[in-house]
Image (cartoon, rainbow, N blue to C red; front, side, top):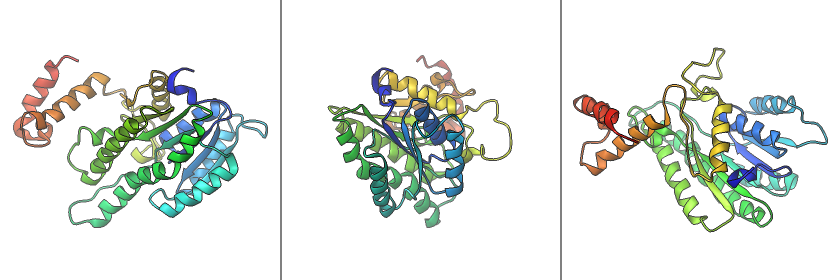
Length: 287
């Protein structure tokens, strides 16, 4: 292991929110495979137990890495306080903090519950996690390599219309992660923004009994991509998928920021009067 990926070290401890399924569970399996202790955090007690069994079924025994679970709602400060106490009581330190929990959903203007539910989980779940565990991770960094991974979304960067609360939450998460990385730039703790592409998870339909679409990545592919980027000490982990390449992602991002730079209306990529120019410009852009 090299670079920030050195955090995946035997005997170190990972705390992973949203760890009962999808990308969170895949990260937990990676941590377990590297000999780490794992604390899975999720709201769903039944899914947490199944996740623990899934990991234990891969060879965990009494003498090997420890896998624990904790039921918590990341939007609640009191749940984080209790989680801090239980995590330290069981493991003593946290070297790897993965703030991955998130919710989706649809709503519109005037629907306060839609905005509150998504922002409280996706945004304040990250704020609560950093405020609670950053001192603990920094304390651990005096002895071992430490890292914080925060899960964002491409919707928080390219901002497609149709889900304002979700996009806003993930845009804010990106900003928070960037500031955290800056503030910790001279510390032993690295920060990484994980941005999955189309991934077959419970949140995107992967929890249903159907096959993975050909265009989607499996969660394990996202985790492998994250590991490789951490080996290179990269902050932005913008995952492609089987339909969208890294080059296409970059072209879409460049077009989106061009709305600001060139004084265009917002979200021109989806406006009928701009679609043709957007597609032509992106096809001709060299990355």
